[in-house]
Length: 352
Image (tube, rainbow, N blue to C red; front, side, top):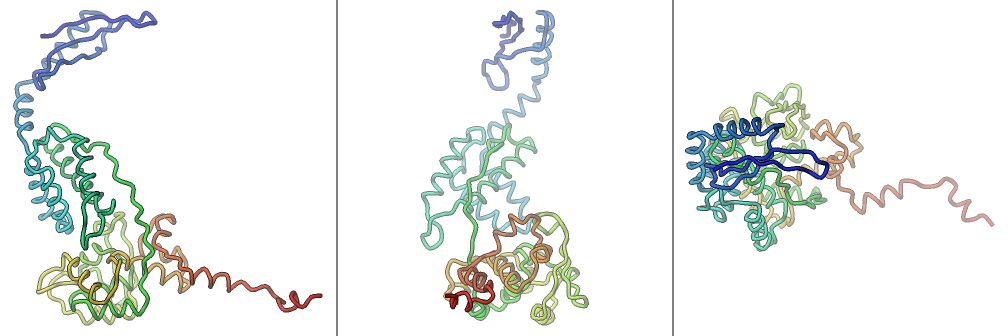
């Protein structure tokens, strides 16, 4: 059932509108038409109704029967085949499937996503600690990707995460290891993890950049590591210098395959468990692997290396982002004040 009707605005301007029952959704639709006469409006309405074909109806019928776990499993198959971060994706998908699981995708709206966020915030993470917004955001980012890929593939009719903004994060950290703590961490960590920690400490490279590192990227002759754009966070290539200690470490690694870091003969993909165990045995609390990047930036700055040079090594593009990784301690502040001493200070106090 469809009909055309005319409306007259306050200014006296006439607009033609249509009202019809959409065969895809079964909903009553009202739509303003770009027409000047009734005949033009009738033709526009005919175009709209003709555009809703039988094929479209069958597609929507299939889309209405898709459950969340199906598109989540499809995404994980893609992640396992294409992404080195599939382990992290797997943890996120596990939580997402536990909540959304058998729910039909067309029944998932913003309110349901908000309930998921509230439930995660009220939960507890490792060692009973509250779950941070940054952790929830990793899961929401995964959820966005799942819906986006499913929508692009025509598996679902709409993306409920379109335009969704992630939670605010207060994730600026200032945890920097002392040299003593660093040595304890090295000795307490498993043997296969030590070269990885040394690389992070000596270069400031991200975990993904380290674990993805291939021997073809390591130039021991010129003491440089070449990072390609497809393995960096910002998509830009850069050269990272190899320190003498890191050089000594790399030359002692046995070359098993194309990857620099391996475990039991296979490429090392996940170090979470080993790293947490090393920190626990070393008695180091509130420290994450990514904090080694903070350690590198802070150590370089304290050694007098110019900011621009450090940024070239770490790949930071803006000073604002770089400053988040440069931890200023109370000792740094005291040293800065003590370094500025007025001349003839004794004469000032002895002045009558």
